[in-house]
Image (cartoon, rainbow, N blue to C red; front, side):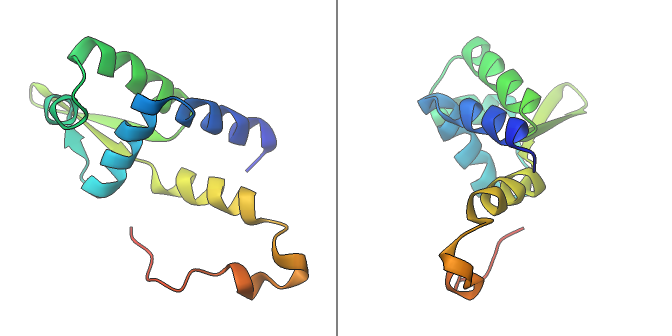
Length: 107
């Protein structure tokens, strides 16, 4: 991941509601959540949620798809992984095994 993309992703996640939205979508799994259910989950009005989702989508952290009358949003795990890899790129004084997660990874 290039630094400019990492900065955009970090900027998108640096606001409390957007971080909550992204975490809820990560927890929801690859199928994501309908916008209405997501608004209920993070307790924000639909119009406010829409503005936050646009920022997250522009940063490449979230994707959307329409199914009938509903819009579903899902976390883009590949972007989240790339962001984490960007942070850990030069970690551990040349001993990358120290940085490897011990727990199984999710989608």
